[in-house]
Amino acid sequence: MPCILVCGGQWGDEGKGKIVAYLSLKYKPHIVVRAGVGPNAGHTVYFAGKRFGLRQVPCGFVYEGARLLIGPGVLVNPEVLLKEMEETGVKGRLGVDGGCAIIEPKHIERDRSSEHLSKKIGTTGSGCGPANVDRVNRVAKLAREVEELKPFLTDVPLELNEALNQGKKVLVEGSQGFGLSLIHGTYPYVTSKDTCAGTMLADVGIGPTKVSEVLLVFKAYATRVGEG
View (spheres, rainbow, N blue to C red):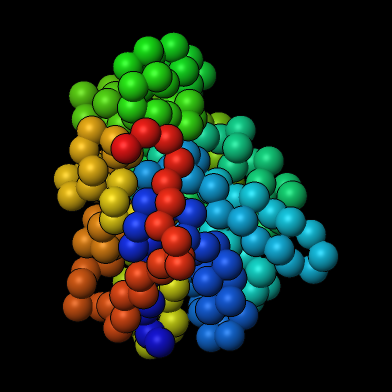
């Protein structure tokens, strides 16, 4: 393997969740780590006769031998994450970096009440944009400050780099797609941060020389949600 990064090549909804689940079952990675913006992107997996719509937990949960991580560059909504952990039964093997910025109710309210975002740009209303603003302003709450998340806190870059140095296999699950990048996408109809391969690696704390393959996922007919 030893480190594969899965990214979206269009405007999201390319089927990255399905690909990550397939790769997890086929290659049996030691670690599957979630990169990207946060819970504004959902990945759908059908497994064991059930449908899972995941916004925080990595789709690699389908392989029970994998350690599951959420990188420090990913925004976390504790309510969403804890609910998904319960639904997928992964509490014993999921770790959250203490440096993840937290989405609070005020961020969701700000997101949904913005006429510019909701009517002109298009937003999922998940609070990611306002939470990223607070992070840039250095006033965001971090995962290490949230009591409910303390049992799951870990140093994700340390875990990943130690695993890679030991020759273990790592699968990085990106979110959204190239066309939604704040820097390279169809601005202003984009998400609140860059969504390209380099940023996905920065989200989890892996250097580019550690990556063996970058897989871009496409769908046959290019479509997108929202404006643009």
